[in-house]
Image (cartoon, rainbow, N blue to C red; front, side, top):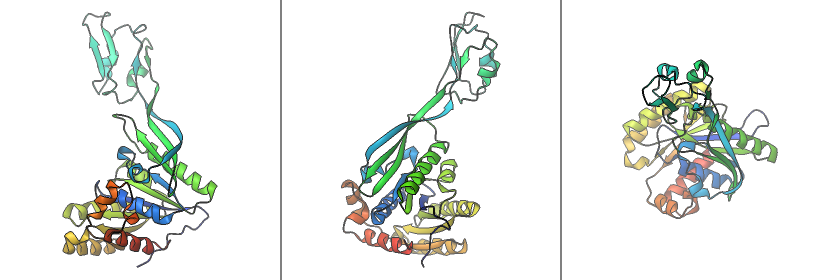
Length: 301
């Protein structure tokens, strides 16, 4: 079964590869599609655990800071030690040394602080700053497959979906301005905010799953998300030959949900060999690579 993923206007088409959980082969498939396309912009939106660069080996051309959220910081010279910030903080982020009124030293634990700003708002001495935080960086690079936009979060930094949106927007901009017909997105796993940020407005979603009970359950959630946003959903089962009966059940349920089954990828030890060689699966001789090529044909690109 073939599916046309062309958009109705002049915008580049956008394929988002996602999965209900990590470890299903999503990034390996996205890298292979990028190699087969040969003329696409690539976006690694799995910013919590970005590893597409391990296969595509990008050469960074541009790098910028990513700022998001704020963090409270007490100015000790102006603090009167009244303790109101500690009383109001719901996250127990205010630490204190010394217990004598007016002589205690207060500070904000940056790990516990949620950046809600309550202490800043109600500090009677206005002794708390609220600077914007640098959470990581995002990059525009060049790969053997075309331009790539990717990012790296800082240590313990949270991903709310803003960085995913930034990466997608930059990939779309490059594709539009440079005339690339396609954007291939390696999306994050799950169904949370980062997934929503990577999926909304896409041309087609390609969900990768495994022939297990948990794989079927995770796929159902992903397909429900695609229906909610009106994105055309496609499915492929990785390592299908490990459980053919479950594979057939997953494909049957996917069809009932309105999704298209594009193909199956068999279990193949050559996938590990490709990863060790820092290559995509389709760049080495392998049965799994042949399966991925068939899926690419089904995408009708």
